[in-house]
Amino acid sequence: MITRFEDDVVISGLGRSEVGRRLDRHPLALVRDAVDAALADAGLTLADIDGLSTAPGPIPGPPMGYTVGGIEVLTELLGLRPTWFTASPETMGHAGPIIDGALAVSGGLCRHVLSIRANWEGTHRKLLAEGALTSPGEGRRVAGRSEWHAPFGAMSPANWIAMQATNHMETFGTTREQLGAIALNARANAVRNPGAIYRDPLTMDDYLSARMVSSPFGLYDCDVPCDGAVAVIVSHIDTLPDLRRDPVRIEAVGTAMSERFSWDQGTMIHEPMVAGPAAHLWTRTDLTPADVDVAQLYDGFTFNCLSWLEALGFCATGEGGAFVEGGGRIALDGELPLNTSGGQLSEGRLNGFGLIHEAVIQLRDEGGDRQVRGKPEVSLVSTGGGHPGGVLLLTR
Image 1 (spheres, rainbow, N blue to C red):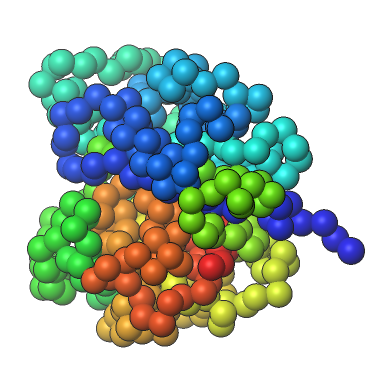
Image 2: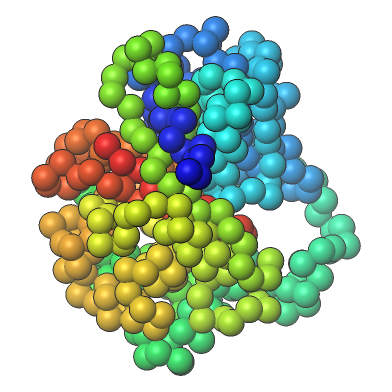
């Protein structure tokens, strides 16, 4: 009999700070709010936490506002001395800290792992523009993968993923209107979410007439830089009597890498690093795509989301455009309710942890006006936007 680490763990606590476009709050204050909420949710205290995980950690180069530092900063903030910890930019997508934490719990290194992701990109950009912050490394010689992108002015994932979207359009006939259906669905769900940043209704005319960012991506194909933090607690299943509420199970994970670690050296018909974890997920469970009641798929750009739909088997390669066309299938009352919080396109870019938060909320039947009917039993969440991806299959 195969031993699965997923059988040993549960998601026991969930917390989210205030989220906003530019909150002008210190990012560590947002982290503390999210941590306190997660502890209260689980019925635990900081004294119970013996594991700590985050990403991307203290990365080199300009900080850009999507990290508040690594383990050193968090242990000082929280006064923790964990028996196990990790922080890495190279992990299984944004779900990596949670998967790593689950492995540590199953392996007996700790009992309760606190996983944190914080972002203050909105305020950070404002402070840079005002001159209140300086960006270290300006004027440096580019290195690594940037050496191949910078000479062509391709300095953003918007440029790199736009190439893949364009090739998908040329190969399979995918249209901007089909990508727009993903953006419109996200906004329709965000209208029902009081915690979302953008809640004004969005029409197809609005989508098509918005300024272009990197063809074929317009403004509403791109996610929303913001400030906010999410904390998730992963606990050993033996601690259930100590927990405040019924937890969510991790049914299976997908972590495999099946293609090159590159934005532009693969097939160019899907976002890189989705095929491996998507295929791997279904080898670790008896469930199938048909069993999924609600999906939270990474939407740094609309095309990312479409790539995940195809890779995970909700439709065949090349049929993602037809699957989302018109938005009926992915609507809140459709066959695959998608990104029910508004996703990163409208709720805000919480670096994948916002999608994980929403996946748990839906299984708890706590979505309010955006709750999927019928008490969903199976929720799938994918994270990763061009670097190694990760997938979590969660169950009630």
